[in-house]
Image (tube, rainbow, N blue to C red):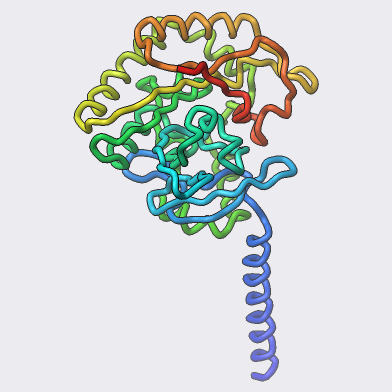
Length: 309
């Protein structure tokens, strides 16, 4: 019996050491992919959480409120404005509010950002409906990199968001485990996510007729306008240009002329129909590859500027 008890004790101690070491290691690491999960038909960050995200050699710190919105503030005495969108407006490279592109427009406001990865335009509508009150002034953002494709009927939100918000909240304390789950999920998908492949995304866009995109956008905007009217909301609408306007050439991002021309034509079509929408300005010049975020699927916030209105 004695050898058995000794072996049992050794196993118990080893398991305890492993668990404690794993917990300790997770305290030292940041996420490579921001944690998120689905709730009520949209994607959200974990509620009431603090965590950090890797951005090359930097760490980006996130604080979320009880509703899963990221809080970026400069002065708590100032009023806040609610922002809705996906991971581009979330600010994956933004540590302080003055580095967020919206701060140049709303410098007298704190930002409450209801945004998360894979939050398509229709999912944003669900979030707006559940996270606003009558007469709220809100900001809606549309990420052209991905939202152009997410307004198609074929887009299935749950193909891309596999965890519910409760699991995401639990895993916020275990970035190593969460990153492993995301990596494993990616490997087991029938259709691998190719968003980091700029050429593949350009081809996808070039084969997607502008008239079809406009029709999809009009159908989406009918739903959006109805929601705004019913909930008596005031809003500003911003569209950011896609990261895949550029080709990756060595250490530079070089504008792809064919893609740029088609996108420019598309924005003109949308602007004719919806003149109040604000489009980010595109400088037709090369930029450095470091202007892409760590995941190579977002332009850094500093690359977005809007005309003053």
